[in-house]
Amino acid sequence: MIWFSALVLIPLMAVVVTAIDGGWDVFWSTVTNGQTAAAIKLTVFTALGVTVVNVFMGTLIAWVLVRDRFWGKSVLEVMIDIPFALPTIVAGLVLLSLYGNDSPVGIDIANQRPAVFLAFLFVTLPFVVRMVQPVLEELDRDVEEAAASLGASRFTTFRRIVLPSLAPAITAGAALSFARGVSEYGSLVLLSGNLPFKTEVTSVRILSSIENDNVPAAAAVATVLLVISLAVIVLLNVIQRRVAARG
Amino acid sequence: MADTLVHADAAPAPVEERRRPPRVRKTPTTYVLRLVAAAYLFFLVAWPVSLVVTNTFDDGFSSIQALFEDPDMVVALQLSAYVAVWSVVINTLFGVGISLLLVRKEFPGKRVLNALLDIPLSVSPIVVGLALVLVYGGRNGWFGPFLLDLGFQVIFSTPGIIMATTFVALPLMIREIVPVLEEIGIEQEQAAESLGANGLQRFWRITLPSIKWGIVYGVVLTLARSLGEFGAVKVVSGNVLGQTRTATLAVEEKYLNFDQQGAYATAFLLAMVSVACIVVVAIIRPKNHA
Image (cartoon, rainbow over all chains, first blue to last red; front, side, top):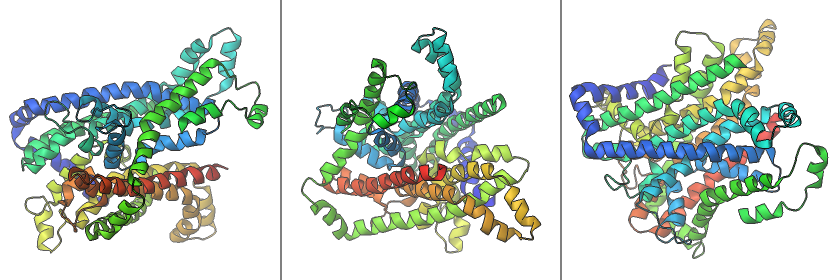
């Protein structure tokens, strides 16, 4: 307990205390400062967009991995986990090599907004897949077959039978991928160029405040991120408890 | 690579088909979904990662060799390994402790603690770094000056890097052990207790063997995460060449200094380790279920 407090709780509290030290006005003017606000907006909206893509693609990939059988499936399984284990800076470099200025496919999005989107997409890939997969595996297929025998089309079966039971897992995965997206830093350093107002995300903004010795500003923006991740954690807990209550 | 995978599956897999004949209906949709999933992963993961490998070996092994001949780079790699090992050790000890606490004991605030444990996964590494600097910073942190008086510098030196790394990798071990502990229950331990085993014996002979695999996964995941930590380390380390520069920081530095070969080579080494970690987990996990 003491260890956990010393390592996690006290430092995080220090961030919040430093942020509100200067009073509400200072906090508010820092957060609404043009460049910072642009960074926060970019981060949150990109993370939202990426989460939407992940909800679709993640569910689709989980479906393929669970219901389909084909040669090379285990390779795909391993590929899902790569973004999670790969150092983020390496992830940035990796994406840069394919989608950067000497791209073999002629797509150059380095230093542009799509680069931020791409980086988020890469690092958040595993979350929805890994949340949905176990639930889909546990699902009783008899119900689906019953629905099919009663004349439901495959799409109707999916929408009415499968999707409702997957919904908590999808939401949990989406929450995690949103949180991860908002807090992403390492993969963007090389890929996005960190141009103010254009591709600068919140984490980068905090770092430049730290480097300019403007700790209160850094703490203020960090508090915004902290609040977002706390909200996600609370949401996850609510989902978990609801699922536990139902099961 | 994934293209060939997709085409190759046109060949029937007779054994699988026979085992569950009515269930697997192959319709065009099945193939479309399969193709979409494979293509998405190919463009997002497989191709970019494979490019790093080809870029590293553009001119044979020379770039890897150059890496090991650069004394600063060797120091950076050693530091990364040293930090990762420490963070694995610390997280293993405390991970097992906190997991036991969470599963076996009832105490007020347990649910809050449980929720707070997930913070390191969802909070930005930069925020983690900032938080540690604010508390342990040498000049004006909360505890920093006090520790500095004791001759113990945390920020801008190795202990700070270890703390940052331990912070971000903290939940991985706990999240692996807690489900296992919940599943095994306490009957065996009670039986052992009734036969006169003391607490330490019960832990050593009953609990530890049964959570062994959970710990192994935890260690592997923590190792991968620790080696790769970048943002938090960047804030707390000060990035002093040859002293507090880790391998991930070196990747950035090299790339920004137009040493692309060196950056790719370092990235390749790091990627190898993390891919190896995932493959290890992927291989041993099914055995555990059987």
